[in-house]
Amino acid sequence: MSAGMVYGVGLGPGDPELMSVKADRLVRGAKHVAFFRKSGRYGQARRLVDGMLRNDAAEVAMEYPVTTEIPLSDPRYNQILSDFYTESTARVLELVRAGEDVIVLCEGDPFFYGSFMHLYTRLKETVPVEVVPGITGMSAAWTATGAPITWGDDVLSVLMGTHTEDELARQMGCADALVVMKLGRTLDKVRRALRVAGRYDDAWLIENAAMPEQSVMRLSETEGRVAPYFSIVVVHGQGRRP
Amino acid sequence: MSAGMVYGVGLGPGDPELMSVKADRLVRGAKHVAFFRKSGRYGQARRLVDGMLRNDAAEVAMEYPVTTEIPLSDPRYNQILSDFYTESTARVLELVRAGEDVIVLCEGDPFFYGSFMHLYTRLKETVPVEVVPGITGMSAAWTATGAPITWGDDVLSVLMGTHTEDELARQMGCADALVVMKLGRTLDKVRRALRVAGRYDDAWLIENAAMPEQSVMRLSETEGRVAPYFSIVVVHGQGRRP
Image (cartoon, rainbow over all chains, first blue to last red; front, side, top):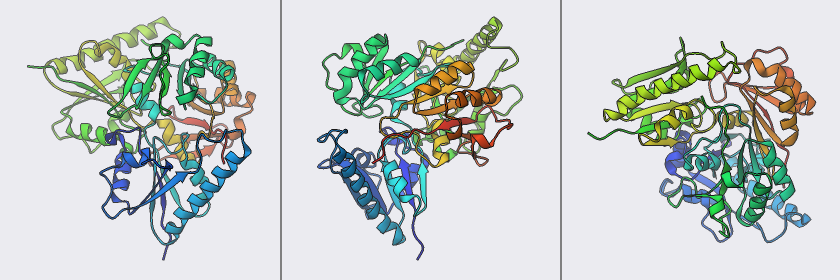
């Protein structure tokens, strides 16, 4: 019996119609789907394929052992996550070695942040893995604002809210167009950094882009708001426009 | 009679299967498609929908009056392009006012660089315009390298080869992961800037990502190569990986 394949499939930002034709085909035909989720949750990647799976599709839910309970700086954090990814890899490998194809469901694009890559690096030397790119959450976010993110020769920087305020402000001063992700509890720090960089009044906050509950607000009009982790802040470039 | 709609549709990076389900549906149903192309060429956006259009679909080819013949710094450049976009807008508007929907074909993502936005800003106050995001060429490029572009808290910067060498080198020193577009005749300058920033040996050159003629090479192994304009240089981030 020959081994199966792993497909790391980008599902796009949230709207099932923004899945690629290839992702749609792979998901609908899957006998085995695997996905990451927070313990006790249904899982955002899993939700994106609701109503698309075969009735007999088997599901491998890979549940994060920790997320925010232990600080990133704690050495246990890395070790616990490393063990988790090793164990998740073993679960996928067992199926693949038994000849099965496994579709790993990935929000957005599999190689652009996210968890899939930790599985990918552990699998790729052992079994064939194909990666299917997807529309990123940031594309859906800037589309939702109704204005292009970059023009002409604009420099775009993608930043994480987890950086220090000083580092954020420095980076924000370097680029023309900005995307800031990993918000949630970091949002007030991101606000301060945007003010230091002189970009606060031009920033937008997008929540749940490409989903029915999508909201788009000027960031300056959301003081005190508790934004979900998957919110995105966008500052548009102002480059050459004939 | 009510006016029609304009759809700015991201077609993704090149593989028709990487078009979104929504783009696929809109393209196959279109009565009118409009697209930009170089004078005398078939057009890359048009090529992406080969075999997908209805037999009776009408095509509006919008042909750039100049591209590289006049330098960007020449004031005539902006004026000629501005007139061209105004005239292209009028061609689309005429159809929309006659009640027709017009699908504007866009490579990659419509709001991420590209020409569609110049049509969009001229249309959006007058007629309804819906923008459908797409998978970017850069996503296809990093997917082609077989390695994730960003991990953990990596900063990603997207740069244009049209910047000065000094500015490129400065930007390349600011970010963890890099994407450089608009290459072609700027490639040697980009090589020098990458060397100054100490990133040259880690850079990859991807040509025709997600297309049958796709090629992926270490940039350092392509000295003297004439890369097509739509090549992309990628330097992967090396962030946290449990």
